[in-house]
Figure 1 (spheres, one colour):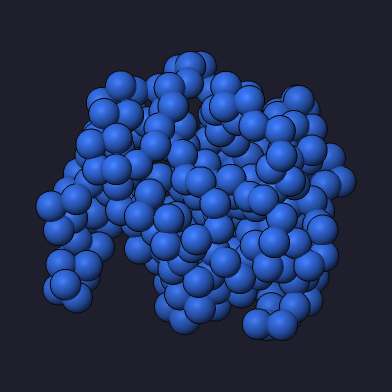
Figure 2: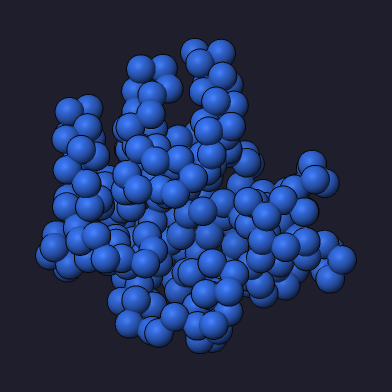
Length: 246
């Protein structure tokens, strides 16, 4: 397989749940759970990119790797790109951005996304899952993705749109977006050099910058829909699930 690097953006100052990365589940911090999920893929090095020394210390204490970045970044993609530049690694054809608040993401889904990327040599890939709870369509905290074809385990269709609004009335191919991206390294560099678009700013979704600039994002079907931690309610719900399973 082509070489890949898994980079995890993380910061302490999330507006809805401050200090989120250091909250514990089964006596392990959320950020360290995410590092563990990345390592379980066996795809390559896993490195946290953070502006906070507390996160760096926590990750390294639990056997992970981390690098400090600036505090000026507008999004996680910009943060991991600075991390990549500081690491000065030249032989990684693909970069996986793994969100720091997805401690329950399935490593097999990450591996499947990567397989699609290296088999087709596409620019950007991401994951989505089927929506089984119809209340999600109107949940502004859940990002939905619209694809050009029905999503199956064997295809990798193109994303037509991402939205926090209800897209179901416009297209039957609407799915629950999972916040992970696999970038071709050259496309990651191109992406961070582009200006923010109005569409991106209005919807607070950085992936719309790619679509607005005619960069395709392909979507792989995930077997699981992990609970992303955006609020205290999310944290308590996932904590209960993960601690019960253990």
